[in-house]
Image (tube, rainbow over all chains, first blue to last red):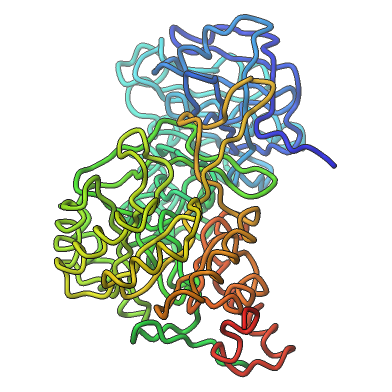
Length: 255
Length: 307
């Protein structure tokens, strides 16, 4: 008789600061089944449970911005503290081609780190465009550089990199980097702008969408992507971010 | 090919498989998707008088026997639900799939108001959910706990709508047959059984219940024997058609439920295990089973195991 764990138990092995409100938690064990773009539901009993994208799978690594009670508690966890997780869940990115253009908006950079690692491991060239409000909000730029990626940055106030939205950095990067595909994670307006950009450049795109996840199992319906966004991004209506996503595919842009 | 069509209170279902309430029934787009995936009818998420956010996460965890959940009746409230159901009804009409609305309320009188209010959306059937196990902190013991309260809600709903309705019961009573009889005598048109079964799961290494609500409703294959027993007892006690559900994941499960006396068969947790395409899969498996066992239609199979 085997016993199925309801949650997996992890211990914090390392907790390092990424910016003024984001920490990276390196845990004590791998999550071997996890693919880039997939997520886990992290749980602290009595505090809460929320989805976090997998920033690396071996060992399981999460990059977390302290924006609410659970994420604040997670960011404060000392080395040796326990946390619980279920997953991995969802459809992740599919690595295609040899020249990958990764685009992260704000905390959308976290799952791209795992994707960059996997891409480089199979010999692809990886260019990363990161966008944020200010220089202080930029996330993981050095981590991507030290992995061996080319990194472009854009900030809305111009305090780092190009001034403006990340789409400006993407247009700039595409001038010398003839990407086979674009992989993006970030807020909805950014993803919608990138869908249009992919159509314009006839570039296959993969987009990881954010949603308020509740069950994580494809049952409650809470994370349905709104119909307007579905139509704009070539996604069938009734699309569940937790189960059908979080990654959607635009494989035949321009057609 | 066997005939899977199912007449339920005059509604023609292409097959007996009904999307259970609380699963993907929150929007016109999701109800339409499930209908397009082959469901015979679809039930919307239960709606109450006022908007409810539901419980905090974790609200739902998978385990070896299925799922435990305490979503906590998350819903937009009657006022916003009516246009959602109207839009859903319009889209489902194109697909020929009936829409079942589902209502809950904190008091008997509020059930009357909900029945009247939701009727404005003209669903094909109303499910009267008097058995949600996950809101006792707010609402006390479910109305399905006694024949008297079941009858009181049923009468009130009957007085407040001209639409047919089904009363959804809990297995967690000494005699579900007595509760079903009380609903029948008070004017219900059908019975839906069973709701999820109250339970608790503990994550031992966290020394904590896994749900923020501590307790929740068990669904999935662990509760199938309980559901089959309940449906069989109801079948023997009342003449009303029954939507039988609880742990139905395969075509053979659906056949068992019909053999226990169910008219139609609800599917809930299996949507998580096999995806929304579960309806087409179960319908195909049911057809295969009926062909192999020489049942030309559902009627020949209905109640056969409890005669």
